Amino acid sequence: MTQFLGTHINRLDAKGRVSIPAPFRAALRTENGGSASLVLRPSHTHPCAEGWPDAVFQAVAARRLEALEAFSEAYDDMAAAIYADAYPVEADKEGRIVLPDSLVAHANLSDSVVFMGIGRTFQIWEPAAAERRRAEARERARAQAVPSPAGAR
Image 1 (spheres, one colour):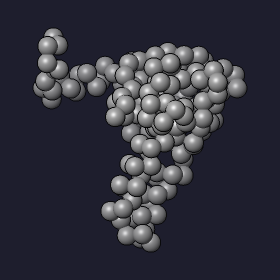
Image 2 (cartoon, one colour; image 1 turned 45 degrees about the vertical axis):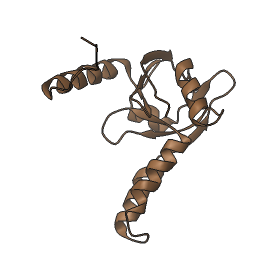
Image 3 (cartoon, rainbow, N blue to C red; image 1 turned 90 degrees about the vertical axis):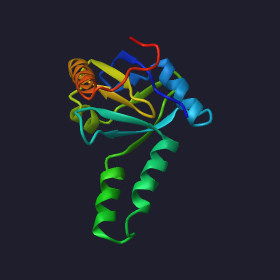
């Protein structure tokens, strides 16, 4: 399984276009069999947009929905939460995507954006909010006494 690693800053132009960082494009192509397509959606828990490789998004969505009765209110709610605000996009030959206005507003994005790898997916943040999020995550991880990787200090 491909992983999105690191934090990268890129410019968001006036048309809502931004270049996906090269390491993330490579990870998308690996995960998608050569395609740089992905699904963008608002985070349920943070003021950021999420980027999902197509296959990962479909697998997670199917797993969440299979456990629910097909015509139940719970199924309808989960399906709406997963799919209603999801945007399939394909990077152009320069690796750019267009961020939908609703995601730009949700994440409070302006001229600079931060791409933050979080393993199977990545997030797109406003720079100051991304720094706060990383600091909060490190602090909570320390408080939970999460062991560091072997050999890391």
